Length: 356
Image 1 (tube, helix red, strand yellow):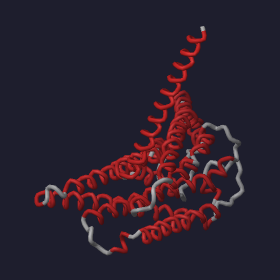
Image 2 (spheres, rainbow, N blue to C red):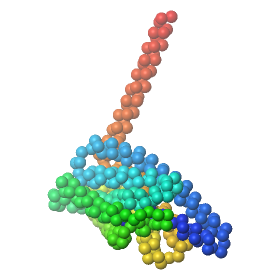
Image 3 (cartoon, one colour):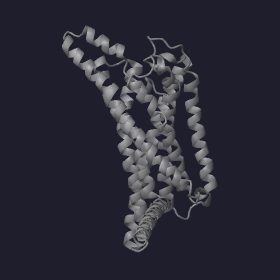
Image 4 (cartoon, one colour):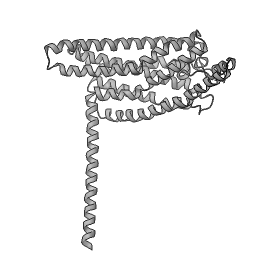
């Protein structure tokens, strides 16, 4: 959402220029060959794997959540994450086509204008809802008798709608202002396809998203520490009542683990990469190293669509119960069908024997 270089693509022109001016043409050729293998083979295969896994896991999650009522704000936040993950997953095939160079040369303009914006918009939507989930866990454990409006499903729906509206407000200008005419000279850089106002908005959104990530990171760490301290103190006084709160502490650990695994490495690498591209302060070799690091950490961020179902299973009791219930019903129906087929075969054999 608002980031340059569709998914951070490193222009091939810069690579070819490096190789043509390199004193060692063999080393330059090997560097270019390694780059081509990484972008055209490794990345498409990795994204194809998580695309198929995400369709399976999040499709199952949608089916299960469809049968679960919005009883709590926590369940409603999880449903919003499922929607964001599915929308983010829909962008993977376009990245696979781009990286594997299966599309036409002007295909990158479509990615710059639509696909990349959708990818980052839903990634940061997921980040915000993970922060809201941690706040919800904090309120349920530490402040269970607080303002009742904070726990109402109506307040949760309004807050969730506000999140989607704000994210759409940040994303739509990037979509509209990427209106430059694509040519072979500017197609590899999304910034060159933006209007002057689009470049300014793009830069502003980078700062906003970076601040948003930092705020959610602080909220996650703060809520985890507060819940852990509260449970430690209450366990000394009320041993019996602290078991349920320990489960809340374990659940927020899952959120923190997923957040740190998927999003922290990406932002640690993405920030210097983005600003080095905007300010042109690094040489091409350093920029290339940052590019490889950013692409791998971006893949970790994309893996979030496959790790979020782990949150649903460990944190949402209704989700896990419904999953086990459906799997048990399917197992029973299969066993009944197998028994019925055995009975029919036995009856058929009996009639064949008696007819002789």
